Amino acid sequence: MHRILFRGLLLVWLLAWVAPSSAQSRAEILPIPPRDLQQITRSAGIIIGGKVVSVEPIRSVGAQHVASVQITLQVEQGIRGARSGQTVSFREWAGLWSTGARYRVGQRVLLFLYSPSALGLTSPVGGAAGRFAIDHSGQIVFSEAQWRAIRGSTSPIGSDSTHRVPLQEFVHAVRRMERE
Image (cartoon, rainbow, N blue to C red; front, top):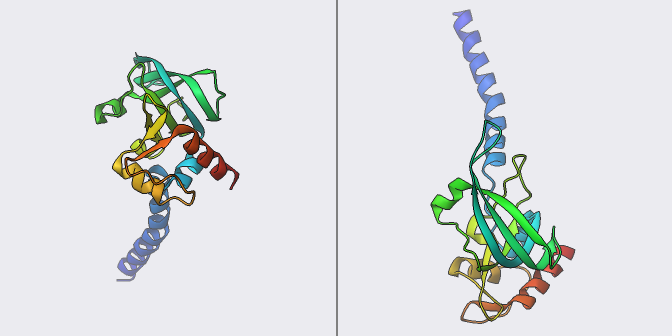
């Protein structure tokens, strides 16, 4: 009887000790998606805008490499991690492309990218939340979800009902948030 009680108490103690660290590990693995522009800006290691000049699949070779896609961008707006005029390449895990998150040569985008991982891979902060289309007239074109997040942001962005904002206005708002 004494042995059963001891084992039961040991099990309760182990569960109480292991459960919080497991929850913490899950939180580190699955970050909470950013809810507004300020969170997206703070989470980004690289913030760049420009034109996609190439998209190339990279095959995995050996255990240290992962199938990925290399995207090369001619930087028109270097906000963090690159300067305007530079050509920047970054790699995304090829699996992201199965979700529809793709780039096209000639496309203009403003990207809030996580800092590259140990494998050299990155992706937009919060998925679609950190990837903004730039139209031919130089305006950011927001999806409905992005527009709601931007409007909920602490930094005021124009109130255009078409969900478009001039690129420079958006860049100025992001730079103000960097200083806060």
